[in-house]
Image (tube, rainbow, N blue to C red; front, top):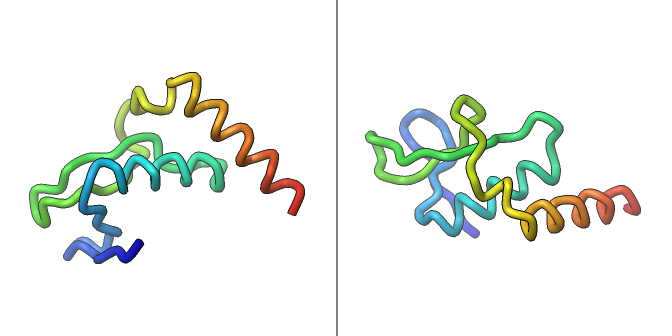
Length: 77
């Protein structure tokens, strides 16, 4: 995926699908990764954040399983 940057310097995701995938990726790869996202008033795109409540997507059983599997897979590398 090709991402642009907002004038704030943050990565700008064009759709909820893109930002939700980035949110999951963040949880897989970073100990203190983003926990939610928001729509930016400046650029109209979505940005990741760790300042809001945990997004319900991250509480979904299938998503939790995916995150766990990906983390374990990363440990094999």
